[in-house]
Length: 127
Picture (cartoon, rainbow, N blue to C red):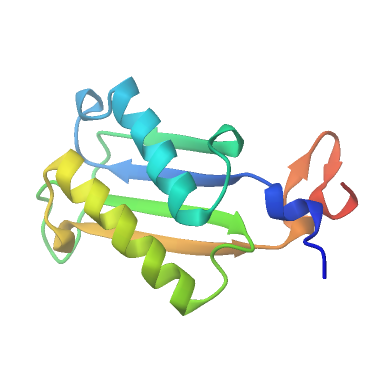
């Protein structure tokens, strides 16, 4: 069966962290797009990333530096096997770029359906 057009739909990542804004340079954002797009099998030009730095956060009872990444996509985050692979690739990037240990990072994967993603004045189901 031929893949639907939503298979080329973009994906998004939302990074929330108590690290300062200076930790998230333009270079970091571009690398995060590249790593996440590659992990998900999505084109980079269809990715969007939003970073919310400097937030009050607590993970495992500690306010030490930490980050939470939410990753949403159509057809790429819908199984434990896929997300295990995505997680390994993204964790590797985040631990090295942000100088955080794996226990200070959380990743949440959200499987989207075509009707949940708006584009060009409609939803992906109709494109």
